[in-house]
Image (tube, rainbow, N blue to C red; front, side, top):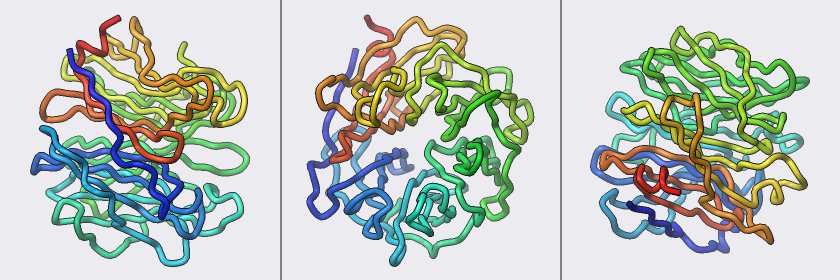
Length: 325
């Protein structure tokens, strides 16, 4: 049984506010973490930072700035290894008032494992399409989950490409009532797609697609709390699903809603959840959020998340730890 935790970097006074980490395994056996950081969220100083480490062990590199949009705040980013390149989709805030309603989505690619990047390309010019969770690669098809932050109702969509050049957006993922965003998606054993949704309805919701992400069923409530905070999931080759999120209902301000970070295990593709336990809990001043999880080539789970918006934490663990009491 294995569980290890470490801090990727300590507080960085040059980038005092950091958020929204993602993690990607690279073909050379490295893990790469990307997050945004600057003076404050949606502040013009915010850019995208990255750190690397060998998946077999070793230290994380000192974070470096890999992208900064001149005079504008950068936002959420996601990574995908697709067609022998590293793809990075990222949001840029184009107006400071209601910043997440005023983002546009851009793309850069890298041929050297994230050390240098192509020029930026605008992918979604309609404002409010915000990425968060990792893309799903199905052969030549890449699906990039996103949430449309808009008035009067927030919905989710999936950005789809078959070649990395031409993109289209799926039909909306909607709830019977309330808002959803930032879907985490995976493929099930019957070929359908499953999305778990961040919502403002105090619960995680689920939606499914039988046409590879073009259309989605209305969201259905699950018996899992959600305080309108990000979540992520992975599916193992055995059909197990591991979910990481804040398992409490909304009960106060943002920090109070994120005092704990939790992990849940389902042996049957989300039908039942016999194991739910803490990864972090600090009821005094904890603020743990925005988990991102992958399964590495080593068969282990690799998780990153935000710690009090001051630094990032990384964990690696096996399924025996997940299922243990």
